[in-house]
Image (cartoon, rainbow, N blue to C red; front, side, top):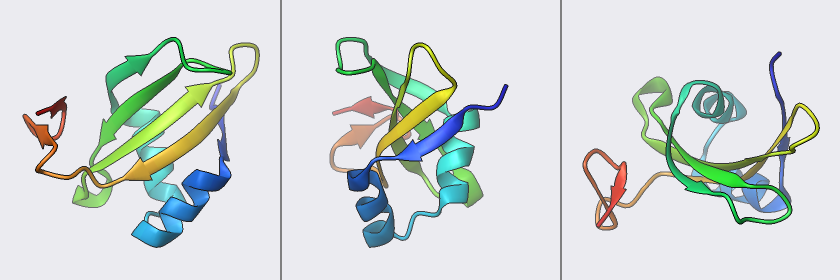
Length: 92
């Protein structure tokens, strides 16, 4: 079953500022690579997902509701090469 994506207000603002489309977010969440897990995040455990939709490198932070098919998109951004190494998959 495909998960329903809900954008947090912060994520929607950042997407507009950074010209990130909903299609790009969906691609990263559905087929990206989880590069960090945050199991203690509240109210739901979250994860940092790496993806390259349309040849654009993106990171998306998302959290799955544990008892439903809803995924909350917390934020999305293009990773800064000064903060990431190994193809934007590991922090410096």
